[in-house]
Length: 355
Image 1 (cartoon, rainbow, N blue to C red):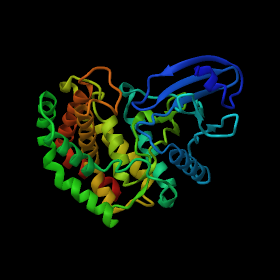
Image 2 (image 1 turned 45 degrees about the horizontal axis):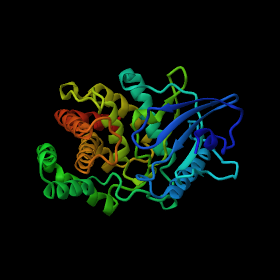
Image 3 (image 1 turned 90 degrees about the vertical axis):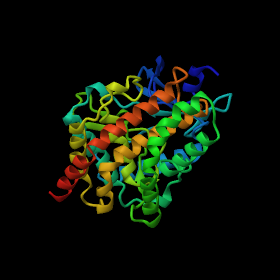
């Protein structure tokens, strides 16, 4: 089915002027569609990853509606219906498509970050959590089993390495030996979540800087996007993933491990913004794990990259055969750099929480 036919199946305003595929994200396929009256983002949803599309769409709508009825400071996502008043359109191959109104923005690239932007970034994630702090997590569906369950990912990789052989196993095994020292901490976090010591809250679950849109002047956050992975979890995962993706001095796709370092100043700026927004609800147990959360998420992401590499790279998009191996090694290097700063991070977080 021609792309224009799919686009014209939605309630768009004006005639199509241009279609541009966007090189963003590792999962869905995205297009910017410029019409004579408005701009839109069209997405072909990856059903290999997202099995329960209807539940994902329901989560987006329920959370979006809640945010609109709170003091949420940012622009909400606007879903565009099909001409048959549905939220999804299925093409001839039964691939699901959806459409969002385009939000005019300044989207910061990795190299453009600075302390001011990091503070605003932290405020945005903190504000998002605050607005959803009293939201009943029973109203949303966990659409991906064990998502951000680091211990589960660890166990899967352990089994995979045990049952693998050859070059790929050898390449991943050395890093896995390093990861094994953290198994007790993974288990402890799981126990605390199960016992309620770390409460389940509504989490974004993909808090990288790419999903934070700033106004066109680049000063203030305008919107938080990509709600596909909104599920209940501990907020340490949202905090940690933001740190993992923004405080690495090297992009996760950079093969030069020597370029990987940890930007402690960015960590401080993000933490300052985040804790300023979350004082009304955040618990001591959550605060105490923020300094480790970046390490946790770097290790988790390394595990996921190595697992995908051993499985033949079927989850994350790749540009060359060893890319998931290189991504995993990048994350291991980042975790090691963060470990050097863990005590300093802990002291800084505690100073903020007590002020």
